[in-house]
Length: 221
Image 1 (cartoon, rainbow, N blue to C red):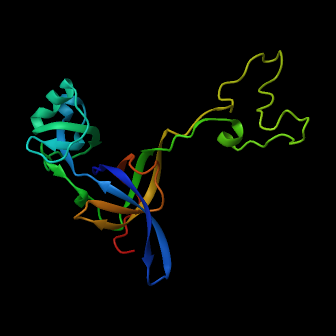
Image 2: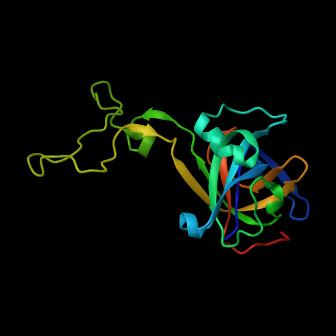
Image 3: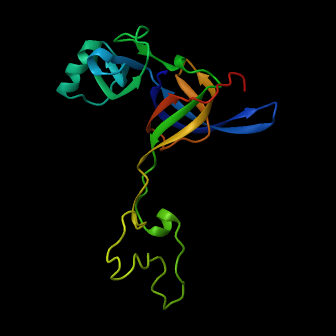
């Protein structure tokens, strides 16, 4: 098991493969840096894991992030952090190479590596069945009165109710999803930016979680 990292989606662009004469769509992600805020052991917590904090400032720091309440400040003071926006755990087998206060940056990833990216999709608000589930519409004639209405939602006296899971109007998007096996095309170490092949969930500025994939890694693409 290898750890991942939290990051912020910057946006999409493209890189060019001169040999194949093709344009490759990529998503730019600002990865880390993250700091180890807590280490969990199997003897004390039942499993081995490290907790990473993202969006932090040091006591003499330069960056400013969201406010932290008192319980979180008490938790973070052991790692010499005054504030932290996000926390995330990663299960690991060997804890010897990690210590509280250690900085985890984009160096944990390699060009050509495959990753799974977890993020929240763009929220579309309350939508009808046509937009939410691609239902067909009714007749568009003047007397129809059923242009985009959902229509019947169930039988009559038998069963006398609507079955759970019926596709109806409701909130669309804004849910967590995972895109698997996306390849890292380029890494800009100085800016801590990773270019991932394809699209990822959410809009620009959203928080995402990068996890190493079990897919076979290809270092030279």
